[in-house]
Image (tube, rainbow, N blue to C red):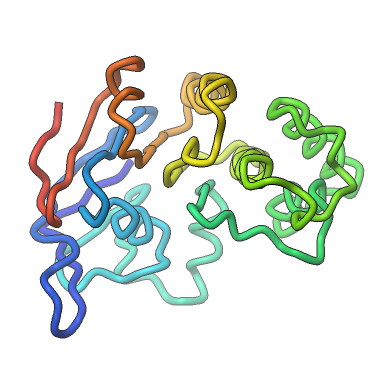
Length: 219
């Protein structure tokens, strides 16, 4: 499903953000991606989502070498990838339900299907009552949950989540993670970046650790 071969990402004048990363994630796996701040976790997710390009090495997603696809083909690749960004990237001029349904809108789903599926996801994250609100009216934790609902709404084959519980109260963390586990149980390949080691010990799954851009642990 996802393969990286000797992947390096660097910027002029700086040490490599990622250095010689070789990694394979099978279809349907759940993987914790961990490491201290600055280890390269977010950059790795951006490479998989084609938001960044590797300096060297190869990345295959679903059998496709993403270094060789045209810029015009990137949106088609992203249709099968749900992403939860650290900064949420919600659309300020759209309501919560419109934000969640945006991925379905791009896919050409009917208005009724978009609304039904979006409201279902909002209910799952406890925010159906905020469907008509604008993102700026929400707390950081609420915006985080909207981002998670948006990432899950089109049942992606791959889900990439960057610190998805970082702005949530502990009481919400378990319920949000359960949504990710449920998606994984339905066959979605899930990679979750986190620096919260309590999650790793509480929910034992395959763990890949980065440190200073190097892969230092995989078990």
